Image 1 (spheres, rainbow, N blue to C red):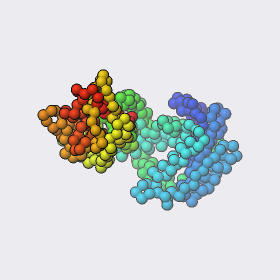
Image 2: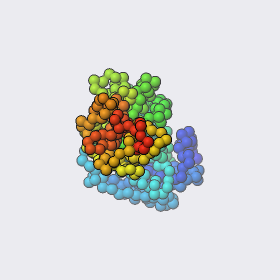
Image 3: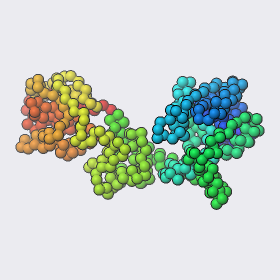
Image 4: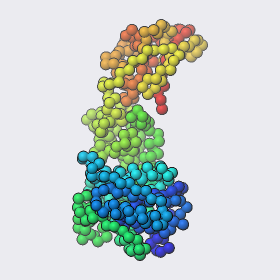
Length: 452
């Protein structure tokens, strides 16, 4: 084992990259970086306790890509390494408005993850280098980023993707291929400034190197430092997120305003982005995050902010994320179902049931006198609905839901019990003031439970 290989082993051990590894997919294109990756693991396979699989994608963008994929397959065949190849016509399949670079990357990773599932493997290794990381950090800075962007390419991800060569410079990998007599190919498009990364690599970094010849090293040191800070902030935010009400199925989340007063802005900003990402699958921009923070600080001119197809809405005690299709007053899913006794009735995201009771069963606010239920229905609210909340007065259901702090995102999907135009009972409000079972020996209890 030479000094270069020891360096890679040390890096892998430092970050515990292959803990509980059940199999490793090597993502190989035929370039010097990925061929060095393949050569390293092939040469040292006896030092690892897990099986290897080489995976190659021919994007059909360059004429020589077919030859490169064939060479990788031949290399693996000679050395007894299982091989899988995907040939895909990226130019004809790439959707309009999506960059070829982004679409190609998505296709590659979809292929790698399909193999991971097919073979029951746990890890995927890509051949990203410290040069790639420096370029990524600089690209993120140019685009605008947070501490997470400054951290660059992660050494490992929770989905099993690992980068064992992030400690290596590209020149080291080329030298390794030469020393080990490993053939590699140079992508002809790397010299063309048709992709953003190529512009950064071929134009911007050479200019910066005139000011600081060690700019790549400086960017990588920044990446390491930012990564440490990023992990620290993320661990705090993740711990807080465990106590947040996030209902991905109902597209609703609620963050108590009290948490804003208890936590540092850096941690709380991360919490907001983490909760929203988990709920929507989308990432908040800096300005969007600042707008949400303004809701917590009560400095925004409105009580809600639009975030893609969601709203962030400030209530009395929380800021809630809700899908726009459940916006107040725009219920497009009116539901009405005949009421039945002792029968569980699915109602949007819950189950409702009217249960017959007799004294001495304890009464509660959801109990109504035993009456003929032939004409009774469960339904969602309608504009103008009123409810007798006191013996001498009525109030709009909309206003009562606000007063009772019923979460904004569920107000249009919870049941009311109506008979002949009169609302007898409402979720969160209980029985109407003149329909309570206070003096009844026989009565009904209306039970509504939301699904988790």
